[in-house]
Image: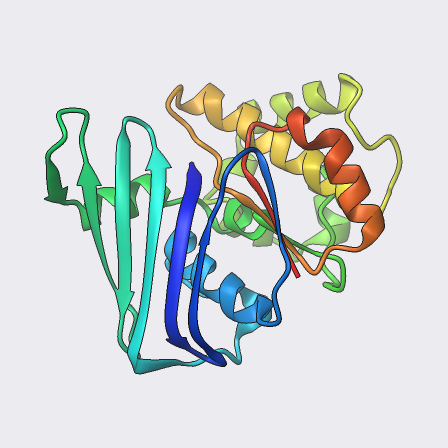
Length: 232
């Protein structure tokens, strides 16, 4: 999936904002990162990003985004205080039709996959594939199964996880930076394609990246098959 553009009207402290994204990696400097992350989160996950819970929509709020996915081009709008979603799809034949349910079905992922789409260096929860192997140390009983819709309990998941960790991942130690996150995203992309050849990863959002994080992303941005958006 690729977020091609987004426009925001009357959301939190943002009166009007619009941005077009090109290329694998985009860096956006803004005074309103939480509002923008909130809007992108609603478009991609149909729920707000957890770091922006204080953002409030109003009656005149309007969010419009252009999404490229599979053979479709979606136009997604969210309106009003409830941010009601409507999606239209532009097919290969050039015709546009209402496709809200299709879009929601296409973007549905388990909670763990969606959680991994946001990297925030100030967040307490860390992304590391080894946490899945040491489930009893890092999750409450049954928590990982719930977060992954039962996927983490399957033998295919465990086999794929061990194979990835044996194949020289990006992070070779228990780093707390961006590399373990990139590893985890790469693993889910590979495992997703094993389950569905049409699987497409959602954009990876980086909240308020440090200079060191930006340096690492610049070096490794082509190692993952996803759009990366750094917002801060």
